[in-house]
Every structure is written in C-alpha cells, then in structure tokens.
Picture 1 (cartoon, rainbow, N blue to C red):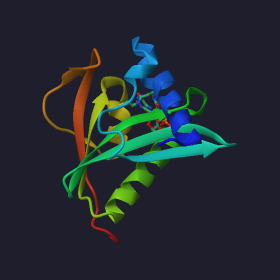
Picture 2: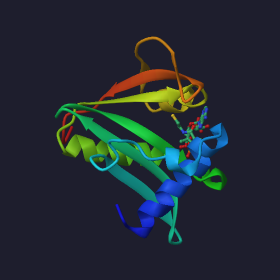
Picture 3: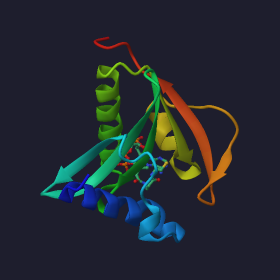
Amino acid sequence: MGSPQYAQELDLRWRVLRGPLGFGRDAVAFPFEAESLHLVAIEAGRVVGCVLFHPEGTATGRLFQMAVEPDRQGTGLGTRLVRALEDEVTRRGFQEITLHARDTAVAFYAGLGYEPSGPPSVEVGIPHQNMRRDLPAPGA
Ligand SMILES: CC(C)(COP(=O)(O)OP(=O)(O)OC[C@H]1O[C@@H](n2cnc3c(N)ncnc32)[C@H](O)[C@@H]1OP(=O)(O)O)[C@@H](O)C(=O)NCCC(=O)NCCS
C-alpha cells in the first residue's frame, strides 16, 4: 500500500471519481481498502487506469473505484481492466461480481455483460444502479 503505484492510483481515483464531485483528497480511500484487490494499468511508468475488488465471502465480491485517465478513456482500457479483474477473481474461485454503477457508466458495464439488480439508489450525491454478473467456471 506504500508503493508509488498506490499513490498514483489514489491520485487517479481522486481526479476522475471524487474530485469532480467536490470531495477532498482525504475522502478517496475506502474502509476496506487494505483487504481489496487493486488492479492498475501502467503506461510509460504512469498509472492510467484502476479497478478494485472487495471479497464479500468466498463466492462473491464487489468491483469498485473503476477509473481511467481522461485522455485514455474510450480506448478499450476500461474493458481490458474489467476483463483482467474477472479473470483473476475467477482464478481465485469467485463466482459473481457485483458493483454500484454510476448512471453514466451503466451502459459501459451492460456492454460487458452486467445486469441491473435491485432499485436505483443515490451514492456520493449521484444516481447509481446496482449491477451483477455471473463469472464462468474456472477454465471454462
Ligand atoms: C467508465 C469508464 C471506466 C470506461 O472505461 P473506458 O476505457 O473509457 O471504456 P472502453 O473504451 O473500454 O469502452 C467500452 C465500451 O463502453 C462504451 N462506454 C465507455 N464509457 C461509457 C459511458 N460512460 N457510457 C456509455 N458507454 C460507455 C464505449 O463507447 C465502448 O463501446 P463500444 O464497445 O461499443 O465501442 C471510463 O470512461 C471512466 O473512467 N469514466 C469516468 C469514471 C467512471 O464513471 N467510473 C465508473 C464509476 S461506476
């Protein structure tokens, strides 16, 4: 957690996710940060994308803090990060991923096979939709 990559990941998360909503930099870390899987994309030594996964038991867990550097958005990087995360947690035996999508990102996740689950909600002051996806059996 003390690595330069983690500092860059936190900076990216703040600039892309929390800063634009008016939150300070101290509001970017989650209580379950240390027990989550952190996957980052690095280009030319710079963290340009990230996605986190928090296990909730042994079969399911939550994808959160998905962010791509603004000048790299729309280039397929977000898709590659989600697919890499899915591969890794499938390998670790998980069977389902859940997430809380911002309304503006629902179409992105739907395109990756995630389905809405439950009613819409408001988090960090903006509309969200819970979504989920069954993972394939390992090696399938
Ligand atoms: C949402 C986000 C993670 C997607 O990553 P990305 O690298 O930009 O997405 P990709 O280039 O892999 O796009 C894959 C597909 O989703 C579509 N897409 C990407 N972002 C989208 C969005 N916000 N709304 C609708 N469609 C979107 C792309 O057009 C593309 O469609 P195609 O396959 O038909 O060409 C990224 O844009 C981002 O960081 N946005 C700001 C932060 C955010 O909203 N994070 C999610 C919080 S829940």
